[in-house]
Length: 217
Image 1 (cartoon, helix red, strand yellow):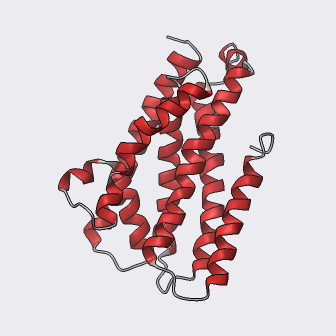
Image 2 (cartoon, rainbow, N blue to C red):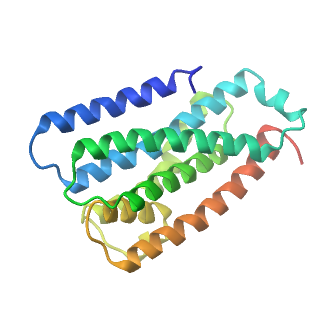
């Protein structure tokens, strides 16, 4: 991440958000805080991972990895852990700057890490289908549009039980639960559903990485 300057960019963005929240002085909307924090796992877990994998494709790094004994799952988890920790660090800067009246730190940390892990695996699965940045930019709205549908419920624009099928709904519920009082079923649903999707996302990302990037059967 240091090689591509992503750590500096991520911390810079978090610093801008944090300073803006501190200078605001007034009460910050809980939904605004959730939106800002939610953007971290999405940006770092999806956008930056996709960009790095494409850079590595251009540099033929994956061709070299394909002939090494290193398991493909180790590559995936190295990306997932690194970007999840980066997202957590940036999210903590933002949430402490926002100074919410209620902060369930355990729920918050789990929400950030779980969301970041999920979006890393989604990124690797998605980017395995593209060959260059032009295709990637065309692929982004296809992947992110359904992911963003739960925001309609979050901002009270449209409510439907079908939105609970989308894992982003679980992410948003946990983020909101971390800065407000939530019902127990929401936390249970959010935690269990994200764990299921992380396992599914990892298995699909592993298959996609091995077959479409490493070209191993």
